[in-house]
Length: 105
Image 1 (cartoon, rainbow, N blue to C red):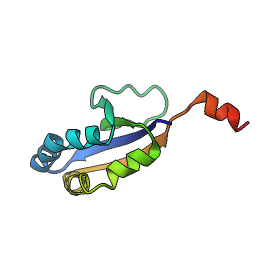
Image 2 (cartoon, one colour):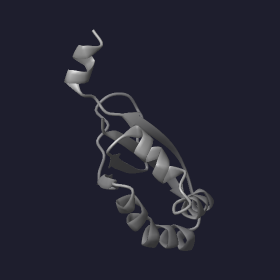
Image 3 (cartoon, rainbow, N blue to C red):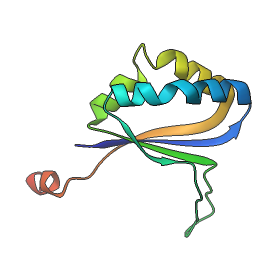
């Protein structure tokens, strides 16, 4: 079942480190079977007051694969770079498959 990594980058605190991160992260995502679905762009809040800063959504084939990427030796130095360069939040979300839900009913 597909899984999604959602990052809300609220503030970039070090532009040089953020640029170094961006120049290397795409290859690691691809290596682990991920693909970007959202990378910044406009955001319209239609309910509530939450406004993401820079929204990023990456799709992976499974939650396990998303964690493999996030915890990998490939991504760990980049993760440290991103955390040093930005302020934000991240969550991993498991996708929805109607057939899987029907089997649990």
